[in-house]
Image (tube, rainbow, N blue to C red; front, side, top):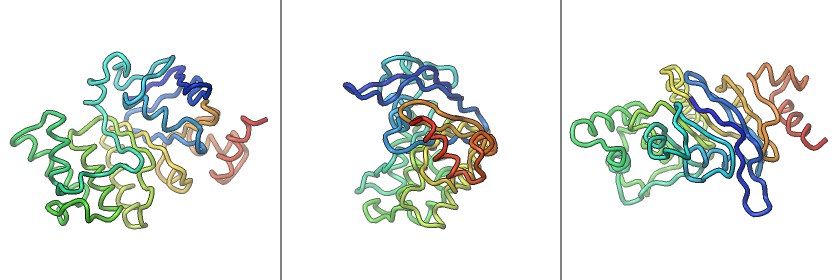
Length: 241
């Protein structure tokens, strides 16, 4: 489970995150939505311990991100926006490298890599150099890297960006499988159709603050909009009034 309370982060005079609070539960898919510059990526980077917050707290499975970032990193799998691979390594070697970083070796490593290769359908490309991969293949391998240590929590930043229809459907199936296995899945997206299809909970951020949260139906009811995209625009627009 992810818990964020009163998170603040500034870059000079710019308040990128201004008191963000929310929870993302295990066995649920939580969507983090907002326009460009809303503070989504900064919030995710703080959760991944890439950035330190100025104020507030963030925890994963009860472990404070600021106090013990290494313990948090062992418990999360992260797919950053536009994540890249080591081009001269094969798909399997890319995944093995991340498994080694998580302390897996020998039979344990082979079993872990085989599991994600099969889960994400990478077997046909596992021995090919990554530099020749399509965008969909890159994303599948990058997601396999993030899942090789079987994390309880997945943090995905625009995971379907640049994917075709078939690759998007396959990735959605994996995200649902992780949710059904009891994992906490937090992801950001600009695609409302994807959010409506996947999310159990939605957190909308604008101007560095949470402006609305709830299920898809609750968001629609709060804004009086039948369409989720209209509801999103309405929720974001409320902050400008």
